[in-house]
Amino acid sequence: NFTLHKGEILGLVGLVGAGRTEIIRAIYGADKVKSKELIMEGKPVTVSSPRDAKALGMGLVPEDRKQEGLILRFSVGENITMAALSEIAKKGVLNRKKEKEIEKRQIENLLIKTPSAAAKVLNLSGGNQQKCVVGRWLELNPKVLILDEPTRGIDVGAKYEIYVLMNKIVEAGGAIIMISSELPEVLGMSDRIYVMNEGRIVGEFQQGEASQESIMACILKSSNN
Image (cartoon, rainbow, N blue to C red):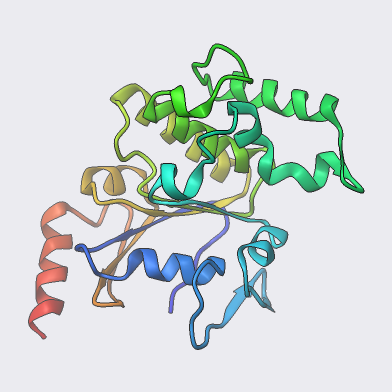
């Protein structure tokens, strides 16, 4: 049971197997669970599938971008625009002009290094692939964006650019749930932090209150109880 506030970055931390990914996939409707209750903007909502989540203004950047976040045989542009298909396709007909506009806008906004929008996303660096997944959701101005290990396997420069994008989302009034195994990243980016262990939230810290030592102490204490 937890709360996410508008305009904040909420960090979820815990050891491997703590249940962080399972919780956010259940929220997003990617995995089936026995029961759940979601309240969004003061109203109960039903999310039975990722389609429901997307319709409510939620986006998910999964942990494994190659297996779950991208269609590697598709182009950079196609990967960026796929979440916006309902906006650019009417009665099964794709508006190529709108598609090109979105591709150009996000490639420029995110500084994606690619020969062109038509290049295969498979051939991009890990950081640029990740920006394609993030850019897909930025186009829709998400109310809630869930990021699972958003900077795993990318270089320092690309990490910084992802952080800038995260700040832009919350400045625009969106909210972010971030899972990361890098404690310095969580401490540096989060407004609040929930500590998880064995599927339960066992601690909460406000920005500035937490340290790597206090988080690990919270995890160890809950493991011994």
